[in-house]
Image 1 (tube, rainbow, N blue to C red):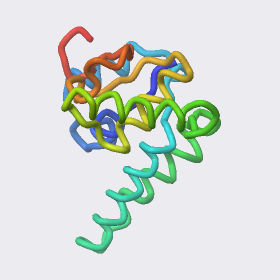
Image 2: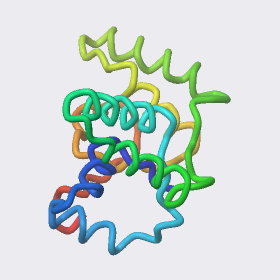
Image 3: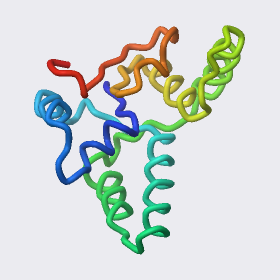
Image 4: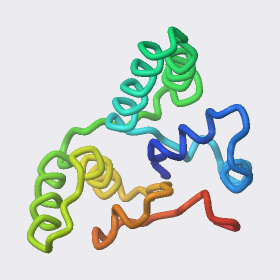
Length: 141
């Protein structure tokens, strides 16, 4: 199971995505790719901001397609052991002077709770969390 971070799914939705990301997606079994509840929230926020700024519902339609078609049945929620784990992650990172955002802690906890790999461009944001990471923006990832 590979959970896609916001920056990866956003890149894939662009009219001209990064060549490394496109190549990485072509190598994946699409049924192994998942979204998480916090990523859906971030995508929704971005789509609504874009609508307010431009009047275009383009990204709302993209998100609707992702949720109802492309990732139907493959959206991992922030539930079970993930909320408790996210709190522990945030506290541990704060103790060492490297706070983690609420969204990133939620995404990391979901991945850890499901023994999933996180595909993200922002690997440094997840340092020290014993999380399996892959950066599709790097050649040969």
